[in-house]
Length: 138
Image (cartoon, rainbow, N blue to C red; front, side, top):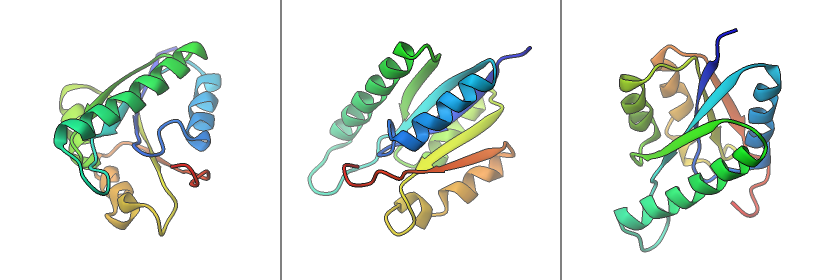
């Protein structure tokens, strides 16, 4: 059985319960590896490109360690602040079977307001959209 490669795109929802549940569900379904993309989005208020990248890297490191402790194979990288550009860059150098994108709910999510999920579908891969439920601390 071939190993399925899934590209996971998340930022503020990285590590949120709905996304973790989806990754664990996929792991139980069969052989899979995940590659996590964390866009270095600029937070509200004062920021620099460097601080945005550092904050994204911290979130990425925390989740890869957590998944590793659960026995789930995951690699990752911090990419362009625009998630669609980041996915495009990665897909130019690597092949994946599917994209999972995790967003905040409608009304809160800048990604949904900017049609990120629809735009990711233009890469002609199956796209699974996971919506965060725990928004209080995100």
